[in-house]
Amino acid sequence: MSVRHALLALLSEEPKYGLKLRQEFEAQTGEVWPLNVGQVYTTLQRLERDGLIESDDAGEDERQKTFRITSGGEAELANWLRTPPDLSLPPRDELVIKILVALHLPGVNVHDVIQLHRRYVVELMQQWTRLKEEEADSDLGFALAVDAELFRLDSVVRWLDTADGRLKRASAEPPTETSSPRPRLRRRVGINR
Amino acid sequence: MSFLELRNVSKAYGTGSAEVHALANIDLSVDRGALVAVMGPSGSGKSTLLTIAGTLEEPTDGEVTIGGSAVGTMSRNEKARLRRRTIGYVFQDFNLLPGLTAAENVSLPLELDGMRTRRAHAAGMAALEELGIGDRATHYPDELSGGERQRVAIARAVVGERHLLLADEPSGALDSANGEAVMRTILAACHRGVAAVVVTHDAQLASWADRVVFLRDGHVVDQTMPPQSTESLLTPGQSQ
Image 1: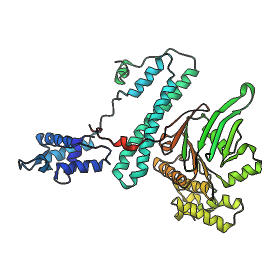
Image 2: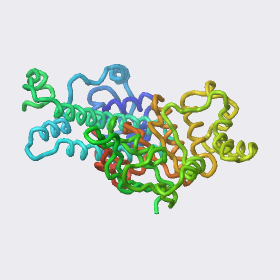
Image 3: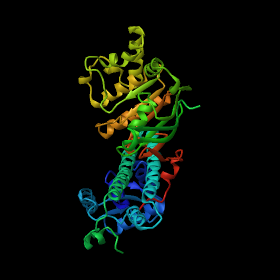
């Protein structure tokens, strides 16, 4: 999510001061994503420069300015909401690379490495779940943000479980010549760099 | 002493070359009020661990202690009484009796143990109400949603003075919202002093536990550390 578009969304409700924008941003993201004041004002200046918002030109302190969204800003916001984020390219996942490296290092038990990471991720999930247990009932935005984080971490554990099982099966089978992934795929997952 | 203790528990099936070690040297302690999750892939020994903890199977080696009493020295009748009075089981497919209402399903174990119907029914109602489903008491299982059925099964598992709850993949085929409700219900039972063990392969369910124990090929290979402060999750600097 971009801070830019979040601020446009807040301004589409009504004109607001910078400080109020910061407070509302944090409240709506369940305080999972804190902002500093500097980030808010820098982003507001850029939005104004691009004609997506305007301020009353009182020439006063930035903190006193009221910002409002322009029609260009409304169009930008509508377009952003409906544009799918780029999920097509696999990110260079550091964890995947660590497991691939562990696989080929002599004296390293890849299952131990997998378990170490699995435990770390489950401990992180326990912390998020504890937050959800304590606070999410009263805050819908917070619950949604925590759910997203839990599903993301859950997918990491599932991958580790799958990798563990795949490696166990592979070690039980007679070794065969490993076929290399296609160079293009190899490049995309960031292995061959 | 913890309410449930497994000390050096092993379980083997078959003999000679056909011997299979389902569990090896398991140590596990669960205090009253604690929720422990056991995570592991299929075939790791999770369900065997649960049936041994629940006295449904005997270990080949080692000792199980429940509420301070060693299970190994008990007679069959004593074990049966322990199961009726102290241990509650929750299964993936609920195992409710279709001809009985929610309240009757919950009070049945108490009646089988000799409690008078009226008293058993009152205890059953109290368990249902504590778990937030008192308004479904007169409904039959086929009139309840999957999530409601599992909460009735949990009420049945903790009704009366049962202090040990053993759950095998309790969210089964439920969706994630109902899975969360099931874990909240089990946690509520723990807050009232129940010791609970949940076996699951699902990290989201396991993350409700105070401690997660990882099982692999019949061995405990690892467990989570006591939960850290959640402050670190909400520190500034995550913005982009």
